Image (cartoon, rainbow, N blue to C red):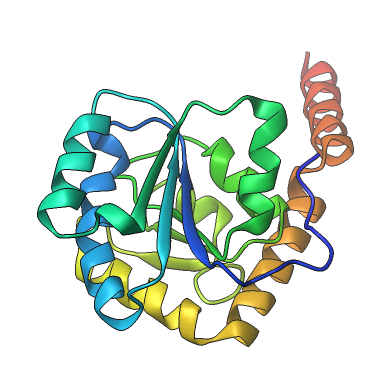
Length: 193
């Protein structure tokens, strides 16, 4: 289901976040980073898909920074419709302070989207910095902004990271591979009994 789009249009570039809008997701850092990105790219859009307790506050903070026209808070999107957001995005960002295994990052990478994530457990298990995405320290909006600007500036880097991300997901997180791994675990356990 989460596959790259053929003949992707880059007329309206946007940075995408999908998930809960809550404080542990580092979204206030994304709003702060957006201010620096806006100074270099005043037409860039930030699309946040999801609901949560922080939604109204984030809108207010974006407004304070003069970024009303640069942020779209989409709210809840049914799973079947979210693919289009991933496929058409320029960059996927997950600035969280901690993660388990982030499903949304798996989905973005599977769609071949160049992704930026904070260097926290979960994210760093999926992304090898500079190879299939970019990692930035958490709570450093200025470094998040630098990473976004770097990818907006470099289409070849975006394409390479996206291609490598897709390959990483296919080679490590495909259901056939996962079930084979479970089977091997069960076999090793049963031999020890």
